[in-house]
Length: 84
Image (tube, rainbow, N blue to C red; front, top):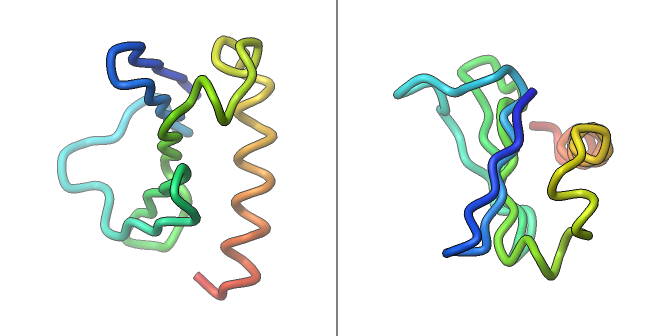
């Protein structure tokens, strides 16, 4: 897992498997105005984009891999309920 944060655009991206190859993301789902998730061809969660990250996430979350797992668990449950 890897977290990248771009201060210029205030966006964080959580890679669940280190990186995403070109074309690997087959479906993108906007959870809300700030959270967008990427799924692979099997419907598995492969990445999470957080817009306005400094407002949505705490400073600690932006630098903590443990916080990324919180998002993974939360969004996996959410996607399960939506039958994705």
